[in-house]
Structures are given as structure tokens and as C-alpha cells.
Length: 205
Image 1 (cartoon, rainbow, N blue to C red):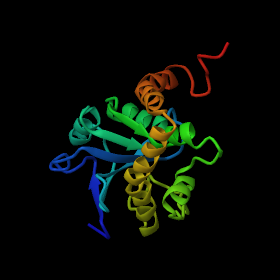
Image 2: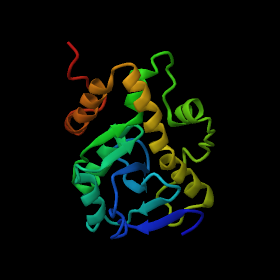
Image 3: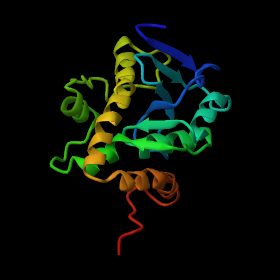
């Protein structure tokens, strides 16, 4: 454990799911192409200041992560779930259930802006400035730098607070049902991404 960061290899600890109702999740890969770039790291936070960073060297023993992802009683909070859930599905072989995406929620209620990145949301809704200096970095390295660990932690520790703020806006704008429909559709959208092409719009004329 280092500054409220717990670094794990290949899976979460056995007791991670104890008293767990919601988990913020993010992933880091070698790049943004799921057909080319491997999953290197997954970050998890239960809403406190502790982040669990799971570094992957193999993908056949992540039974605790798989139990978490498929547990429909636990809300999984992502920012841009479409990518993270796809990478987890591709490498762990299970589809995440009970998804909440802060990026989708933001786009539904913050229609006065086109700024929906995690950095933008943290600044606008929480008045927190994220550094984002490690956006382009080698997540396949054997050992992570202090800067990489700090970056990875920041990608999950604010998601619960962002969800709280966005839920208030979804309720105010009466868009909660629409948001939930979008979240529920994400597994199908991800299967489409992997089956055809991420750029292919199947709903286009």
C-alpha cells in the first residue's frame, strides 16, 4: 500500500467484494485500439480514498474481478464505459453488468457544453483540477512510476462524487430513464464494436 494505493497482480484481493454496493472502474491499455492494444491495468475504488490497481500479466486467474463485473447488485461506475467494458470483456471474457457511465450522463444533462472529459467534469462539478500528465505513457512497463500510479488513482477516486452530482441533474432534467436505457444498451453496443467496427453506425440510413 502506498499513499492509499494498493497495487495487485492479475486480480483483486479476496475480500474486496465484502460490503460492496458500488465500484468505480477504469482501465489502461497500450493504446486505444482493442484489436491491437492489450489491457495492462484496471483500477477500482469503492467510494473512499483507496484505489486498487490491478496490473495484468495474465488473464486466466482474475476470478474476483469477474465476480465483481457480473454481480448485478453492484453498480459499476465508469467514465466512457464503452471502452473500458469492451477491454474487460475482450480480455477477461465476461460482460459487465449494472453499468453507470458518467460521460453518457454528462452528455444527456450538460447539453450547454461539448466538454465531457473526466478532467472537464471534475473541474466543473467538483472544482478539482486533474493533471492528466500521464495520458500517453507506457502502461505495459514492468514497474509503474509514482506519476503513473497517481494518474491511475485519480481516474477512479472521483467517479462516485461525479455520479452523485450527475444523478441530481438527471433527475432535474427528467432524463434518468433515458440514461438507464443507454447504460443498459452498452453491452450490445460493445458487441457491435467488436463484431463490425467502432466507426460503423448500424443505425445510420
